Image (cartoon, rainbow, N blue to C red; front, side, top):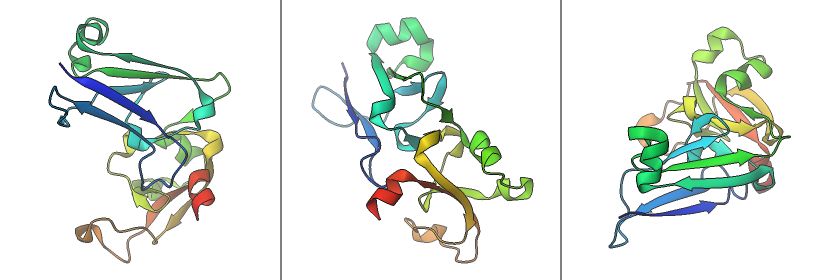
Length: 167
């Protein structure tokens, strides 16, 4: 039996720290590597790529064990969390963000950062529109892994309200 602990702290800290997290624990309170699937509206995402003001959340539903399997099949074997945003929330995935901020097609091949932090799975980015301040091409970013360092590399950086509040 696994226990799911859902912590929502979505917009309270800089992107490099935890915005929301789901810890999957076994009976001995050991963290298990498997993670539940996260859906916000109909978008599949991960809590570390979700930027959503908690006031924009209408409800959260958690499906686990046989309920998750019955409703979502094998995809739900580690649980499913569904976040229902309020009606006025406009959620943007990476392609819509790049379109809205008129990032040229050749530049769309650049790696993506949020608040100068590299995003490993940009296809999972989901940001509420009002949380984005700007999107720019830059060479500045936070190097979390030394092997990623390449001082001349250009990135697409999504600047969020969260970053502005903290720095």
